Image (tube, rainbow, N blue to C red; front, top):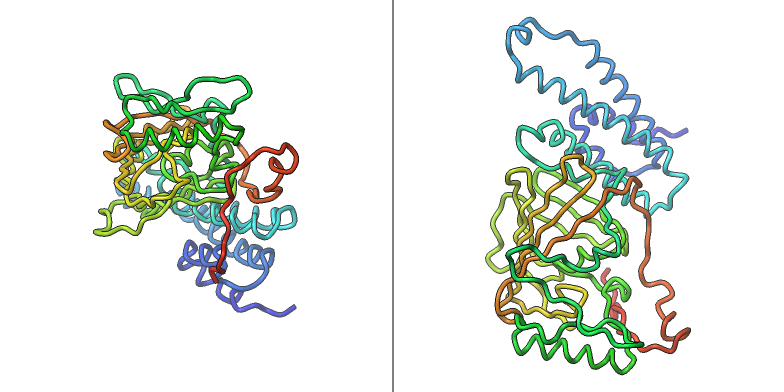
Amino acid sequence: MTTLPWIQDVQGYRADPLAVTQNYVLGTAPGDYPAYSKAVSRAIALDAASASSERVSSRERRGGTKALEHRQRNARQIGIYQTVLLNFVMEEDAMSKTALRCSAVLIASLAVSTVAQAQTHENAIPNLASADFGWQHGFDGLNFRRVEGKVAPTGRGPVLPGVERLADDQNSNLTPWAATQMRMHNDLVKKGHRAFSAQSRCWPGGTPAQLLFLQPFYFIQTAQEVWMIWERDHQVRRVYLNREHSENPKPSWFGESVGHYENGELVIDTLGFIEHPYSFVDNFTTPHTKDLHVVERWKISNDGSTLEATVMVDDPGALKAPWSGMIRWQKVNRPITEWACAENNLGYEQAFALQEYPMPVANTPDF
């Protein structure tokens, strides 16, 4: 068997395990999954044995608690790496290469989040990330819930027999422009058109409407960024920590999100949105302008089983006053799987003769 270059670099793994592991799972290190995993696992086993057998120095016994905590934290991190790479070997045959790489990115993020977990009580950082669980809401999470004492989100309109959901285009908080846009979509639905759903038509949900997608999503946490990865179509939203907004952020579906931790919560501020005819802030075709501003506060329940986000949406072009909504997810104990959105995309038109909104099409290659 040929010895691959990265197997010879086990010492490099010991020197900087996070960098080597992340480089590998992100596709920058060559070779096959099992060989790399086994080679590095052997290095981890040696490190773990060394860490467990090393005696605590007399200085640490006399009160050098910081050094002791640092050593214990490193030992926990070594254990996580060992589990990570052993799982890598077992999962490789069971999953497609694409899904495995996505899971691998999540797994590698544990190397960073492990330290955060050890310091949760000290720094009040919620532990959102795991390769083994995600967050999912039920059908009651398809709409934002009202927050007591705040302006309510736009809701559902009148229910008509044989007609799909309509938006409340008479909501008093809408500007005339926004009400007109919603009325246009309502008229289409009344004439037999299907109601718009970003997740059904493979459009990005944007911020904050992506939070309403039914399939679970997963977190990656590092010291510099937080990623949200949705299982459906593998949409990714990035939150940059402890920095200011760009002077001129490039407009995008999810906007430019910057965040920080505060009293055990993840606080996110987002602006810089693209203006697109199929970009809405909810499931009721409530439109927005380029001036949309969204603030979110994320927190986990005391038992760690529930995730909650409170969302404030402000857009002077679409809303007369900012509204606030809330959504909750339950922990689901399974890894992310591959879910391609655009398959069978003509089902409703062909099988049920229903008019549909178009799906995104790449007219030019992006490579």
